[in-house]
Image (cartoon, rainbow, N blue to C red; front, side, top):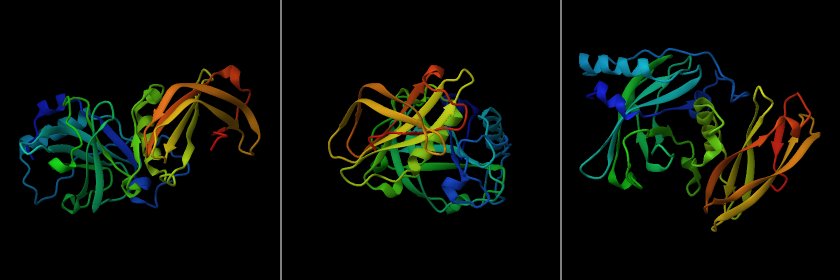
Length: 297
């Protein structure tokens, strides 16, 4: 694995998934999926039988120093380089970061290469036994080889791409389209957690349309962010002009209801999309925990 400090100029993104969602670890509390845990350091862990040069070791340490923060109980994929091959595939180098308090290992793991807009470039099921056991709070580099038949389209730019764990492999036909402006009101950390939550939602039955409230969060100015997953299980594109949303207290009492214009949102067949709706402080009068529902679902 030849790593250069210059490769860091690709500005690849770090993506996150909870250890509980990815590995089912029983030491992780998943009752509050958007709770921010303590920040952790993940120094390199290189097996003794790996032939890693001092130069590569130094370059990897440099990339880790510049990597985004990692929270406890998260597993991170920190992108290093995505290189097109002569046969039409990609060799993608990344650093796997273990933010959990347990050693982890991977067997069959599905990964997706995305461009900076979140469009799927390639998807593949990898056999990662060679990565070995990754001790708690450590990192390890790996190169993922996508073949030409794994690629759906080419990267227009090598900047801003990301590699993500695909938790939707069992869906067979249903896919998540992460594009859109739903993420602009959220931090990068919350966006990754919401994408992880969306990928965990089971595909809808054939011919069904479903709405799932993934998160309700309140800003300091009282602005309420409601993120909803829309699933189209039909063979035809779903066009939505508006969507009604109810806010409810934990006991089921309705706090308020409002209808939001969506500017002709299109959800392709067998696809899920995310939207974030904004309740301003004057639209509700409640200080406690709230849940959101879509009455149509």
